[in-house]
Image 1: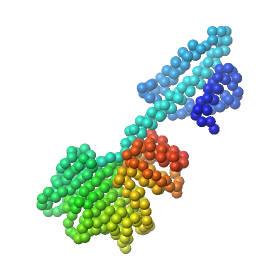
Image 2: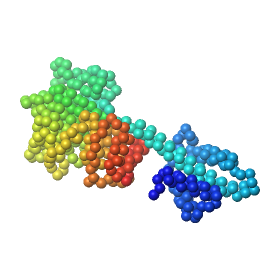
Image 3: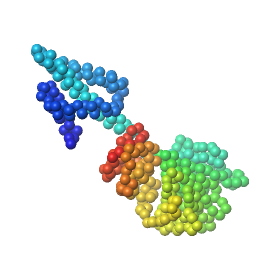
Image 4: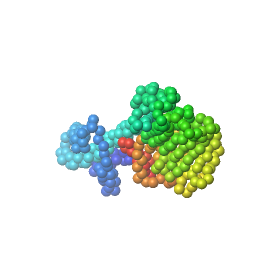
Amino acid sequence: MMDANQEKAYLAELAHKIKKGTITPEEMAYFDAWYEQQRQGVLHIDSTFAKNRTVLKKRMLKGIEKQIAKEQPRTPIQRLWKPIAAVAALILATLLFTHIFQQFRQRQEAADIAAIQPGSNSATLTLADGTQINLSESADGTVAQANGVRILKTADGQLIYEADGAATGSRNEYHTVEAPVGGKWLVILPDKSKAWLNASSRISYPTAFSGGQREVKIEGEVFFDVTPDKHAPFIVQSKGQQIRVLGTQFNVEAYPEERDVKTTLIEGSVAIQAGKKPMLLVPGEQAVVNEQGITKSVVDTEAAIAWKDGYFKFNENIESILTKIARWYDVDIVYTAKPDVQSTFSGKISRSRDIGSLLKMLEYDSNLHFKIEGRRIIVSK
């Protein structure tokens, strides 16, 4: 099979043979098949070069006709030259047409890559009365006060709850922070426990913990660093399970659209209730809850919390990887061919890298090809 440069040289040779009238039927059949393939291709025209395909064709043919007019011999065989020149002009026009649009495609793909930015600090705070505050757009400093609590937003993506006096209401108020697709945020809760939200995640919590326990509810992926308090257990409610701790670090991945809920323990201990009997984890273990029940295993904890520290560390199948990429870069994944779910990919890369670099890394170690169109990633074999 010829590469692009070899094919270009061969087509130039065919053009020369057509002009001389020495092309064979087999060679002409090759050219006809190549031309038909190019003619049927989906082409995108840069508006700075031509408004549409008709205008572009006229511009190219006009330039080629001028060039041929300069080269036509002033002899009686000019009548024979005209049909040959017309065929040569068609070949040259097709070659030029193809070359220009290859450049346009490359430019368009580069523009699409530049338009797809990695995620950043972005979240919305919803107060008890339904008021919503866009944290990425609001000024740094105090963004709200509620029930004796002052709520501060910092420049580096933190939301901090600080006691500002006695509670002003007879009952506790609940707030929610939601990080959108392509967003992340750190919430420092009223007890100084920290909750990092990954993209497409949310956490709901009271403005002050009371009643001998500290309870929050989550969706998506959240990493917790819980402030120890042996008198008030910290409880996390998520899809299909309840986590109970006293003071520890752990990651919970509980996206509603995914089958498995994963809890990975970094330090301390946790008890996971997903049935009649709680399961205890020790550092380095991960519990998986789904419709089949609950299981646990030893895992790579660095991979589980890499997102919090600003990078991807993969050791999983391509579909799982692309789901994470879609959430962080806010893109849609379109499959023209389904990848092998049994085949795993391992790699490590910063979450601040452009999406083109990330996809090239995946292509290098898989049998898949990725094409970027707008905010879509087309996956093919």
